[in-house]
Image (cartoon, rainbow, N blue to C red):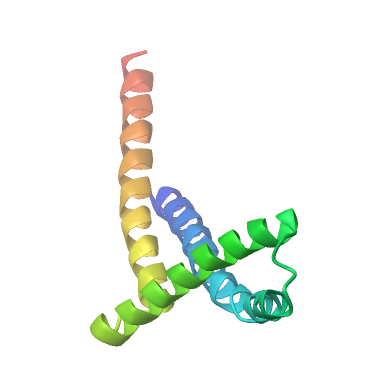
Length: 112
């Protein structure tokens, strides 16, 4: 069972890291491009199709960042907290699933 727990820990840690760094990337990606889009908007380059796509994307990113910031300010929940909860929940779920699969295989082998 130690190997199963280790595997569950590794998978949940990797997934938690993806969630955390994805959130960090989202926050960082909202700063520089939004300034460039604002510059284009103020200079009147808003007729470009690429600008409209980027503007929509940045609006979505900024909305997510504002929501994340608000949640952090009101409830004190950070990306690190979310990463920890994802890791813990996944570790428990993966461990339970792997243990169940391995127990079923052991039971089948013991019947043979």
